[in-house]
Length: 353
Image (cartoon, rainbow, N blue to C red; front, side, top):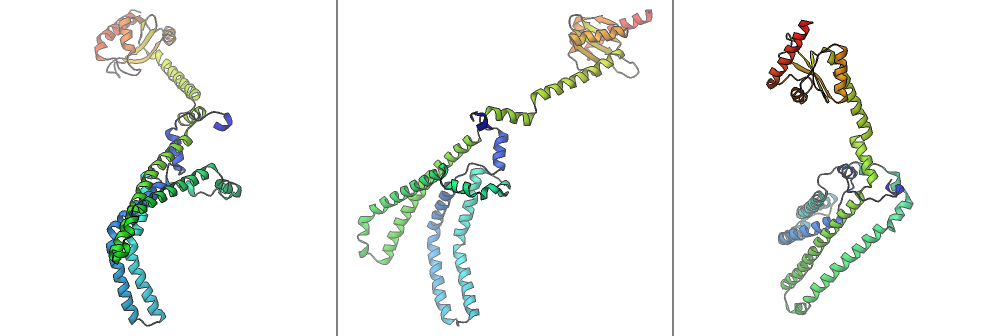
């Protein structure tokens, strides 16, 4: 709609629009965060797990050679040996698999929070459109991703080269060292390369996630017309609501006017207030306000009162005080005396008549 109307998306996304995007699975998420997390935790795991891993692997190798010597080359024995080796390797490798699974879940949760959307699994015929599929490979997004990947690989390769180059002089003397010292040197250089790679990937992940969040914010922006339409959907059409409110007020006013003939007296501020008071000694503990109004409503109350020969008494202070009360409420205790005097006067008039 924004494109058709030519309006620019200048308005910040509303909560409803954000929720709609989230339900569709469209959230700011970076693959670099998962990659950096997996690489970093794997390196930390390997730093602490390398020694027991190689030690257990060496023991497994020795035990396997001993067991193979006693095995007969028959199908059952070969299957049993394969299952035994597979189980032993699984015990060695399960921490690595667990870290991969844990990091994948944790990185997604950290970026988008708890989210379970089934809309992304709904079949969409457009996904099988070969023209649109080919367009993805030559889109602006694909070009940006390609440039990002090339830049990342180039940067990591350059840092790895510098790290290895700094150790070149020491590497010239490896021929004079024994095997263990050579392996320690190679492991130290490899660890340096991996640690620097982790640092680069963490920085790139932060940048990429920030960019993804900015990009999603831009995508979720709305036009002024979309904001108005959404407000109508959630809050209702203001014109319709105004009309309904007006009709409700008219009905309430009609009900109130139907109560005026039951009043014993109308107390007025002659300029613009009228309050109808009713009192039935058998059923009421105190006089009750059954109708009130200002301006034309006040004059309408007086007109009905005259038609039904209800006394209209002018009392400005009392009228202003009673007008502050709600319809259906009893007269406040502090106004009992003033209202009682008015009612007594009205009853005396009726008795004279």
